[in-house]
Image 1 (tube, rainbow, N blue to C red):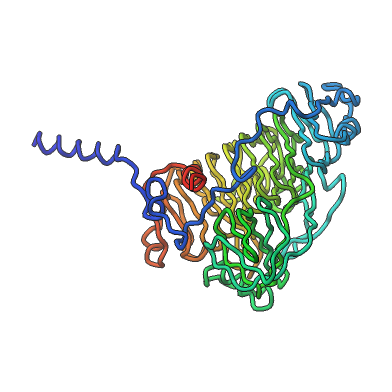
Image 2 (image 1 turned 120 degrees about the horizontal axis):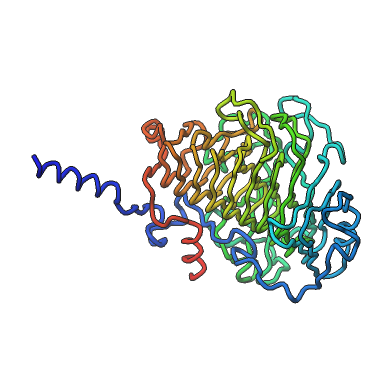
Length: 503
């Protein structure tokens, strides 16, 4: 009997302390990976294709908002002084000394190499005293006809905004398949090695592109529009005649019949950043879904290689909207100590203090080391976007919102959901596809309890690796591939960086 007890204890110890397994999709270091598999290459996400953010900005001009009349802790509005500082010409770090500054309008950043930097995220506080809907009203309706404001899903008080206007390249000679490393044109494109290209494709009448992005299982598409656009970015590694060789594998097919437009990708705003400060809003009661005042912190629109780091966002309706490309958002805390949340009557939307936390509407952006100390209706959001990476984050009860319109080939890795009751709670209008497109990857997602995954959430061409589902048998029966135990490597993005940047 003692022998049997000892054996049972040994067996339990082995099961508890068992080493994480490896996935047949990747292996330990990518040795099992195939570009034809459901697992994309995410390794180029973020600033300068995944590079570390700059640590030395001493070559940039340094000015202080104090030089333009801003004074902390004096209960006077400093918007005019901040805006004057932001008009400084050239490459510049705009320093904000310790203290609290009252602001009542947007702070636009419309030039490259403009850095807004505080003393630290706990010592420099920008307190915005109004909502965007009061400053610049944008009344509208949501897809269901409910009156609301466009700031419910867009805009920010610190607004990095650029444009990307470049001539169209020649037409493609034929389709380039997903996973390909080259594009072939009917005539030689006038580009240089090292340039980035932006590939835009449109849904069209047939919606064949949309069906492809759902791997043939889109759900209802009655309300998709012909002009709905999907974009991916790549860098030119080599030019041979009419052929561009790329630095990364295509995240989807590129078909000349899908209204494809390819241009140089070089936005007017790049290498700008926001760092070492807090963005705060007044104490208030959150009105609930589509009743936001526009207490939105940051917007990055049509920019590239910009960053947000070492930031606190406090009492916001929405945190960061990023529709740029190759931006890095890291070391971020979102809290709502002075917001009365919604009534806790709904398991998904109850006890929430805002609408959207972090939203990736662009491509190849990197969100790293984020901490939610409160709940938003949608903590993390992807919609008609691709190539984005969310990693090393945690929250109270994170919702990873897939807002329909075929968000495809995005990665969520090494994330602690907290409770786990809202894992894939998602929004989006009616009949614009399933919540998720194909090739979405969830890699080592932890929670206090098994998570629920709706079998109709997206196509089976998705990856749930290191995700313990409460309805695993149902999902396996439908054809989903799931590994419920933790796997090596813990962070897929870092492992892909090591493999692909050395090849």
